[in-house]
Length: 524
Image (cartoon, rainbow, N blue to C red; front, top):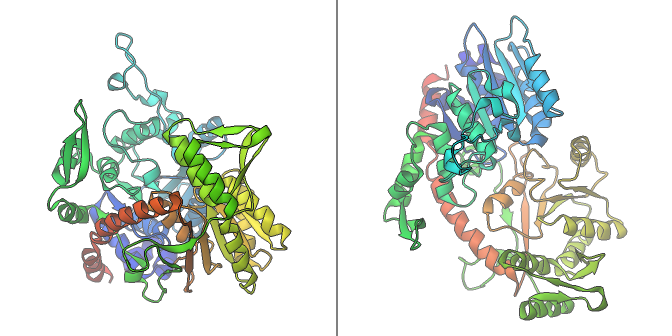
């Protein structure tokens, strides 16, 4: 503990025991995946790990990659907050590519600085491919040279630490050619002394997708995707040149969970914060006699909604008479239309399909708010149009509503969060599931309503943990609104099945006892 106090006194004074455990485990492990549940403080745990591992003299350079919305509002502020007085400086890379390149090239740390933290958005790592002149432009011939990086200065040094926050956005890869961003991270992996990947939801609902992160962390151990999957998964051939994963092979699930212990640290809120009440999920089971069926608030379609959905499933299109018609060209388009129609009746405006307030979910939300006695609530949907239309309807009913989507500027985003968190001026905070899944704390709300969901449980869990966090001990109630007889039922089953596998692998492979033993051994 004295070592941490000397390196970062603010962290030493404020960090919870489980966060100190993470710093000890991480400093001993080298490159690792920190997969603590959202809201447990992976930011402070990462900074504590770096500072505990740092030199008594000399200078180290660390780079942190994060979603753009978290570059300044989260990481840069947290470095200043926790490492003030610790001989640390932070350089957020913002603006155009030219501005970011110039900022990095022109930065000179103070003579007494021991730790330089550069914070950049994930896409800053990109390297464009180059093909030999005598070879066809095929993925296997692509070369990723640092001269072709979008920010060459990022690749001009060896980094002491490379951190990738929300690593599921950047590091997932199976076989084949990497994306430009992933290629950039692979180059950084070679030019770094230590790598730390952060995500409370690192597999995007599919355990085989862990390989990309594991390979990035320890490429000398995780050398081949197919060699890795054959260890844990059953493979079948598609009759051509590809193999398909067909679930775990006998014992594969247990073996994977056990093997993850050496590289991944995972703690749940229930384990390390028993004083934080667990999330409560309202509603009932899809099948009242089967507690294994999906839990949610199950709603009946409105008459017009049922008619519109039935016509679409029969004809493959939505006919708006003289206004025109909307076709579903392809499986993906049909799937999207069915998801949209599960939310509300739609109309055609200027050739664009737009949801209306003829919706059992909107009606439920109005009823809930009328009985809420002013309680704060967060409402999420993956469809920005649904958010905008429902928000307009609620405002017309006299409710104060903030709306956050991918179109919301960063400065406005910060202002909205502060207003919701620190005043009583806004009762309803509506957000797009993707845009609001990271870099937000909305724990002044005790209630969350998810109007729809994806088949990837990570997406919903990210939003849930915007309000269920270590920063406030309170009861959180979550409502999944699902419409009977629609695609909502199928999605609920798929998400639940994936969550079961995910929880077993992550929460059964936490490495907690080892972390705690190290902490008890070295806390003095």
